[in-house]
Image (cartoon, rainbow, N blue to C red; front, side, top):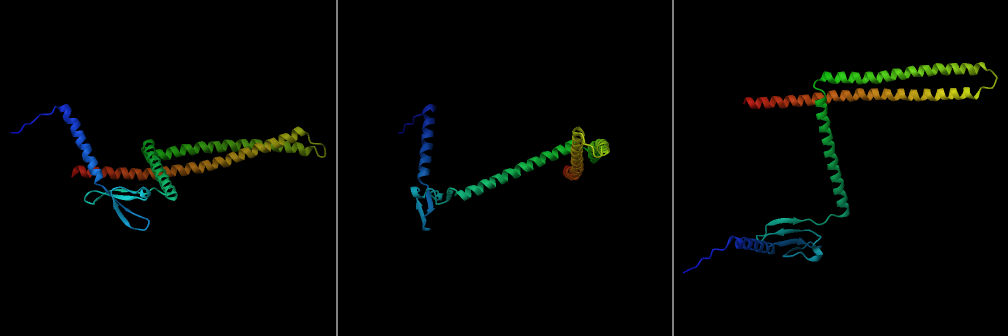
Length: 223
């Protein structure tokens, strides 16, 4: 005759947890470490010797099947190489993200290629207007300089007033600044033109890709 006792649920759960913990402990005890010493000799032990823990090993289960690999710590050179590779990967990911964001902004800003051309012409017209305005100012300064030089020349051998000399120097300095501004604006004009040309090329590429995807989706839906 056998007797069966029903355990309350509150007692069964701790028992299950204890059995699981015991099973895990038993499994861990059955693990074997495969490692190679400095002489190249392969060893199999249930624990890693203290002087070998930093040299790497392979953990085997009770059937001698590798279940985990313990890599040795990186050397200083390896750490530096890994850090550099991590930085390279992060930089590439950031560049890719920025490129994708720029592509989205481009397609959202211009719905047609003609809109890019219109925006380009407006931007260039603004810069060209600034160049023309600056050149007109330079012409005024040059005229004023000619007048001052004429006054200086008319003095002949007489002493030149200090105020006249200072004004000529001031006008020359301002003319130089305005000429530098014109040169910078011309560079801006060329850069703006090139940037919009780049927008056009990239817009065409993205539009072609979008059209190809749309065509593929349409063909798939028909099939």
